Image (tube, rainbow, N blue to C red):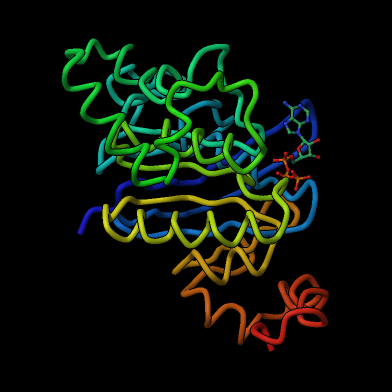
Length: 247
Ligand SMILES: Nc1ncnc2c1ncn2[C@@H]1O[C@H](COP(=O)(O)OP(=O)(O)OP(=O)(O)O)[C@@H](O)[C@H]1O
């Protein structure tokens, strides 16, 4: 089957410095891909390239087998993607308004917006917050609104850059449980950058480890964690001290 996204000979440079060098990398429809690696490895840059938010210095990125002109992804294509970051970046307005924004921009009829927002408020367990100003939410509530806002447009790919990392542990696990259920029910393809092996282990079914701008290992998450290769071992060994799941 044609991959959803295919990267070929991708390079990304900042001045003379090589940030990423990825001969080939693919994202398959329906997978939950984790991207992990040390600080500065290039994870966020890779995410931005896959989401067509950043232009590579070289190589090509295909969407469903079609080459997308570098740095010039049409609005129609960008609207198939959603992104949720660590900071929820909510707007000054109600929670309802914030979750509706993607549909409002797409000029979806008001009755349909109301119906969909109501559904997503329920799915994320935040119906009681609908009329509250989004700037006065707790971290966990704000992240639920952020994820509902990303999911309501039914993205073909959901990009996640550390959305759970600022949450305290009980808040994080409750949200991850709900989120995992939502992702598996909707079958959404997701690409998830995280520093946290527990998050990666719980949510993802494929894992790519990036070190020094290169994908050093990728494969089913349990296999990568159980059998790290010589390039990923030292990075994963640090985690193994704390997480028996990776032993
Ligand atoms: N536009 C840019 N100009 C200069 N340097 C850049 C640019 N974009 C990224 N970098 C550098 O590229 C490297 C990779 O950055 P990136 O944010 O992708 O890493 P990361 O793996 O997500 O790191 P972290 O885990 O710390 O968030 C870093 O050293 C960063 O400073």
